[in-house]
Length: 250
Image (cartoon, rainbow, N blue to C red):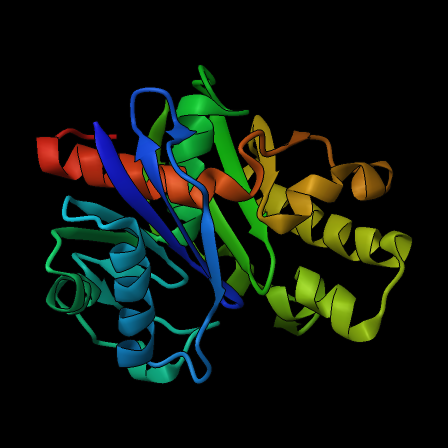
């Protein structure tokens, strides 16, 4: 099945058409900066423009940087607060005229990695951590998703963890890979005490730089970079839309 996947992040909106049987992108990936301020109508217009560029009229899967329950946005850590309470599925359908399924962006990335990437075939406890503007998380056990975990929001030394260890913090403070790697390691050690995963998959933009930080990670759990790299959110959003349309469970 072909579905258009959209990945909305704090800094960029990405999209492409996905072959859900193979996980491959069938067209060039588009990326535009996330509109600022990142309010509902601004982002809906940006998504509609990307859909128009693809001349797309089929279903859409959309990963979104927030807790999403039944299409409704519940949190707004890295997006404008005006999103809280908005039915994102209805909003995007209004602007695109396409059936749309919206889910948490880290959950979307996790779905892709479990089906086509580093978590494929793993029936243990797998945690996907996406590191970028914020820190997102997805948890799977026996291959099934526990949706809307927000492990980037746990407290670490008196502050929210993503304010301490997200990649944007590295950039803003101009931290060396060593200094930032030790921050990330401290966060992952804290997470390990809460979940004790069999495998941690490190995703988001930082997955392409895994070799720069891996030597600073001392956790007991096995940790590997995401295999789908920055395409995971797009692919997973498309897979989620397909499962919803076919009424399948993860």
